Image (cartoon, rainbow, N blue to C red; front, side, top):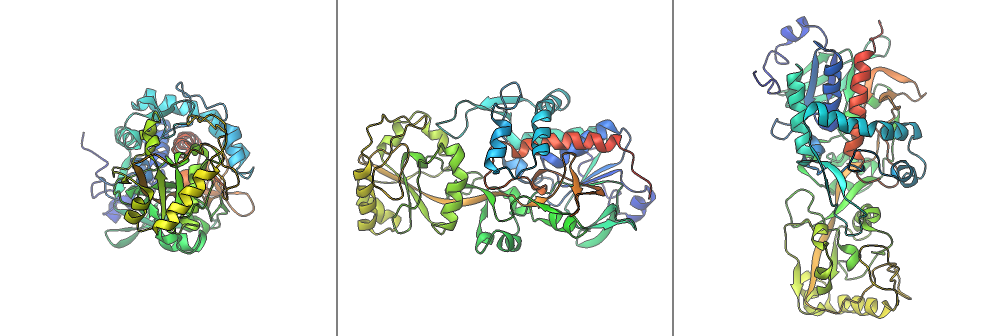
Amino acid sequence: MTERNVLDTAVLSSDAAADAAGPWDLLVVGCGAGGLATAVSFAENAPDSRVLVLERASRYNRGGNTTWTGSFFRLAADGTPADDFESRMHELSEGRSDPDYIAALCENAEPTVRWLADRHGVEFETRPTYFVTARGPRLMPAGGGASLVDKLAKSLERLGGSIAYGVRATSLSTDAFGAVNGVHVQEGGKPRHIAARQVVLACGGFQGNPELLDRYVGPTAGELRPIAPGGKNNKGEGIEMAVAVGAARSGQYDRFHGEPVDPRSHQAEALVMAYPYGILVNADGRRFLDEGSDTPDNTFEEVAYRIWREARQSAYLICDAKLVQIEGHERSLLTDKDPITAPTVDELARKLDIAPDELTWTVNRFNDACRSAAPYDPTRLDGKHTVGLVPPKSNWAVELDTGPFMAWPVHCAITFTFGGLRTDARSRVLDEKGGPIRGLYALGETAGLYYSRYPGATSVLRALTFGRTTGAEIARTPVPAG
């Protein structure tokens, strides 16, 4: 069989051929987890339908953020949701995320894992997370997000669907009644219109758009580096084009999911998660946050955000030789760059271009405050805290007194933005009055869900889950006339 996801010219480049075939039954904007899951699910439930996925990148670079992520799921080994799944999502959003949406995600997550495994050949495994404090491993697809994209794209091909590469959606078209009936695109530098009975927006947030980052997140946000190359293609067009036809917004537009990374590395997700076992200092050699306020799986996003906001994207993790004695510490350092080392704090400061007296003062003051008698335990919240220090360190407060001393530069990298479109639990895009916009759906990061803090290991999972359920529902729902 000829590989259909290297789109032949008859699909888009020939207007006459495309128009003669009539509108596509389903047009999906975005080739990541959510877009592909929707297209595949629709094609399974509507045999002989015409399904097209648009991808602004090349085939080699397809998949957006999905391709680059390890894709941990907040699920047990059997695919069932973790015990705290729903409560954690409500807690971290401070009660602002849609409860019906969260309940639907929880209910349909395990069937989605079975669907991926049984019908589409996705193999799953459990692996330890990046955190020494993790209670247990997380479920993830073998091969990470890249495997998901590859297997779902092959399934779509097998089912007769197509993927068009190098095509950028620019706006939606509507009929006289306000129903969405197609997408305007740029293909090879030329504009054209693609008619469709139903349109799904699954093209990510706006972390790859400096202008929108500055507008919604704040000044200098546009300078944030996406954590993976795929994020650069998430320009926010899906969100903005839906708002232009009356869609309401949802999610916290001035927040994002960020992660602390080593800026020296060019690899995706060069994470530096060992900060609870040392101190974080800014370019002046001063601490600016509590490195041990909670377990790192609950703090790393806030730590990254404050590195950007308060340390002006210039922070250093300072540890001593005791770090390497912590079993599993290497899991928390995914950078491919070696630490900067020195036999003394003074010499380390010189290598970091920090005033030696400032860093030495900070370390000495920290060491003097480490007076708690609680036993040190890097695997849990141990209560070993500083006394009389501002900011405090609430756990894992152990003196930095054993050379060689080590440092890693740490920046905030943006993973995805929280702001998106308001949808219901059926992924229908809603207008300002709360009613659905006919013919329009959104999922994944294009659909706004998160507020305040991100509940880890839920993003790819929700894209896949709502992709499966939404594709099946669209296939079963007749398109209303006029």
